[in-house]
Image (cartoon, rainbow, N blue to C red; front, side):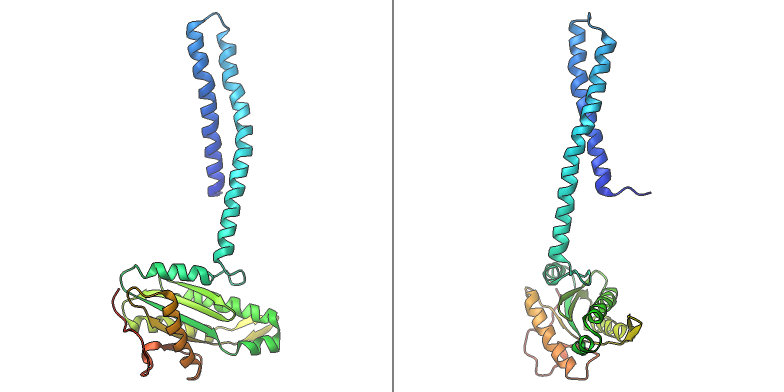
Length: 251
């Protein structure tokens, strides 16, 4: 059985505290005995080993219990601040942080926004629980289809985001098209009912020094065109001949 990391840390800390306590008691007594050897040597040695060995674990227990509780609360606070509770995907805040970090990597960063098509009809016809089930299903599929080293996140509502580093637009298009296809080919089963949904996706390439907000703004423009071109497709911002904005460049 594998011992959790925090428990291993607690045990190790307890052992260190116990050894330090025994050493701190034993060394002064040993020196004292060299000066005054009349004392019952065995009794003194037993005392300076047994007493700290009993006291130290008790002290360690309360100290480590408080430390472990603080660490668990810190992890939980981090999860609540950075994860979407429904889908267990990174939230908008975490996406901005991670996508910003990707911009420091070699290659071109591509960001995409995916929106579930006709999601309101799912809620209206089957209820909000079915809508939640669809969100979870789509979230899992997009996370599985995220580019290697990249991520998928839920921005809010029925809107998701993906980001990754690609060699060129052809590689990005292939990845995002697979994500769209994965959703369309997988039904969500809820309450014995099979729900078929699709997503529309818009994506764009980043440029050096560009903010994630600017990337998402262009991706949102491409998403709008995907919706109005028939839905259930991946649309690049570069496909719009009327586009205005910076050209993709190597990072």
